[in-house]
Length: 477
Image (cartoon, rainbow, N blue to C red; front, side, top):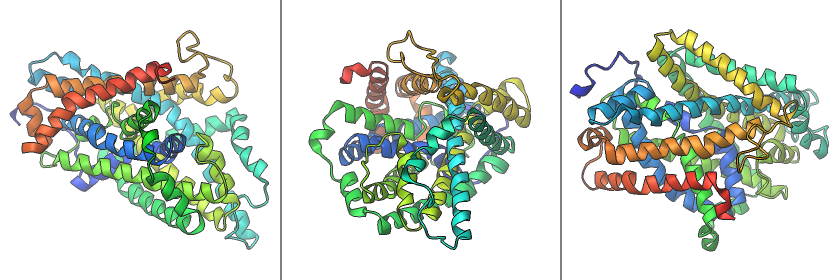
């Protein structure tokens, strides 16, 4: 378009496939392996899954396309792309607030995300050491942590939390890897990582799912996930959880898809790629459920174990299963790949803006922001030991008992991301020039009409609901 003639020189993905892999990697993260099974387990399985799929189709996909088109049209950083589309629409560049909020949110998320990813690194190390011991003992197919008792395995997380030096070291290691990839650039770093990591991720996920189907109770898991209790589905809390999972699973509201969309070529059909990304992300979440729940059910554990499911219940389950030593290691490698592709996209958002705004080199910018992320992340890392008694938002309703980790997680997830998503839906649905927006979507006819209805009416109402319920959870009580 003529309106993009003044856009600065911008790196691009080498192909449409590279864009899809990178964007899917951004969306697929620990939320798929950790949050989705937790939410499904706590909200009745099949009822939650049914509502989750509906929310992805009706709300998440339209927003995903909206964010992607902002980036592709602007071909700038997230904030500049939003301001550019606003100006071309005759609107105030202040609408770029949607991207400002997203940049702040995603940088804050990265500070504690690297802490959680450090836990994954820890379990990779313990699982690798256990497998080496099993091979040395001539028992490579034994259960995970064979010499240890169930009680000892379940104490691994508390033991890690009690060791601040180890937590910080693991956090630092993950930050360094993330910075290294982003510093290498769009093609040499982000695209190359996605091109290798995402196929490996899918290969491992399918392999572990097949293992779970053979060794675990696959019938019970499938019944749990795909047999909806329609009475349960009508409960506001289940709908709210499904909507929140659909929204956050696709990294909406943070600007990741604006950033990655800016690197998409003009001949990329954003509607098709958005659909592909949403399908792949949802498929990963559901397949992860089919990989985890058969193992959980086979050893008599409850599916509603909550956040401990991944780091306590699963290691315990692998302990009693043949081949658990190998599969346990592969599972945490899988989680590491998911965490890394998402952390790269979180860092790229702020790196892209700082480079454009201040003219600093990519390497210097990535390292500088990496240092900032690590420093702020220390608050979250130490929330489990030295700072466990601190409550930074004690005077704020709903955050009275929140540690630094909980507070940063809560403010970003319950306030900043939904707020950015709400502004995005209103901006694209009501403010941005219809001709410019329609031309970027790749949609025509009835599908364009449906998308415009969803982005203008359904998405704002749904995201506003997430925002209100997140800030006032007592409404569901």
